[in-house]
Image 1 (cartoon, one colour):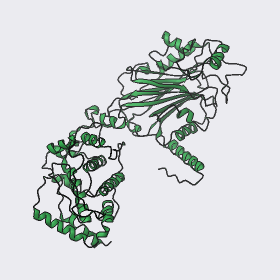
Image 2 (image 1 turned 90 degrees about the vertical axis):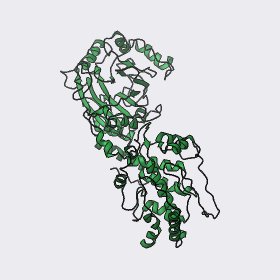
Image 3 (image 1 turned 180 degrees about the vertical axis):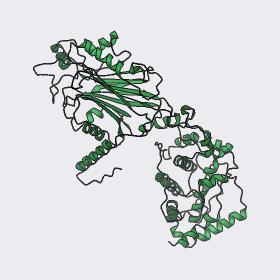
Image 4 (image 1 turned 135 degrees about the vertical axis):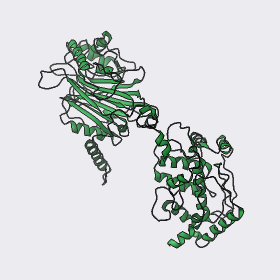
Length: 612
């Protein structure tokens, strides 16, 4: 199609002024008649290409180059110039609704009215027909219809929308405004309409397709619900903030500025329920290489969704720790990234989290304590990582305490030394700074090979675990003679800490590669040496949802133990030192390459993977 022909088809668009953010002026009948004649004459030459041009122009515009969104503004105009023309309107009319949960802001009708008029004029110019006249500017509903023949040749008359008499429309017609939550509830109440997208971010290409499809679905144009949906989607993409409003805000005062990075609006957008799922895993690896398939450990079948944060602590770790981190990344996939990891001797702890959460975290701080200061190899002690997510502080500890059944006092001493020697926090502005590091954070989760045993004979424990008790147990196990529970009840160590109910068999000691308890010459008594404890500053804000073991993992003489927690998250202040979205990119890239290679092997065909 030549440029001249295309310009002729656009004549109606170029001659009609675009009233945006201005008071609508009524046109005389003579003006409407002249516009109709211009529209008709421009279509007589090539009416057979009307359908093609309707779709083509919406996607490509006058220039012929593909646009992400259909052009919403007239020739030579942009958003800034349009808003400048509407400065005589009140500040209220210039404000678009904030994109947040339960927003009560109201949307001015000129923005909606402009979308309606723009789409209707395009259809009139391409199809050579006149739709019914647009109601007054303080109404949202447009009664579309064609006065001639539709595509199949049958005549159709203008019909009012099915939702015209809804409470939502009555409010619109009486006040001239609509609230976003009213529009969404109106859309949800009509099951025949497509559902509203669940994601906060709406791709602009999807919006363009939605606008084009809705315009072609009905002979007379889009319904009121479709137009309202388009406006909401467009508002999500533009994220328009008036300069006057931006100048009034103070982005440096944290909670005073509701739109700050760590504030309430961002928190509700990222975590609508203000609740976080945390997965904790602890495993004494016995220095052995982990299995290639780690799904049973990090993605157990009992979980419904991948947790938001995964914290993995290992003792007697596999020497190649980077390889271990890459294997975890490969298992979790691209939705999670390695936020931070710390090493102390043979102790290792790493934190993977949802990749959108890294922007709302403080810088991570780490510390370590050795309980064997004179030893050449740091095999016993603890390593910890603390950070803040929004306004909630978290501390994760991985430890390995003194071994042997008769060393209870030594283990208690180790725990006390760790609590008093962890120098955390360092730069984080926490509310309290006690010598007891566990008292400084909102949530503390302590995991590791704590080495507490069962004060029973080996024969009794094996008989109970192998014959008398079925696993997983239907009720929480009492664990008679458990040294850890005795210590906690006496208050000797781990004050204010709790543990989830145990339903799984003992995690120590097994013949490596089997599910058989130790058959070596030492014949160790089975015990629950691998544990996960937790404490919360406020009750009921940190809850243990699941507590289990991964007995399918056979490479070590210990079985991994995991727990799932739900944690309440509070909004915070921007004054905390932020991590700035940093993560371990090398581990991420290598993990994604391995996933791509695995997919290629499974499919048996070439696969091109581009990771940027």
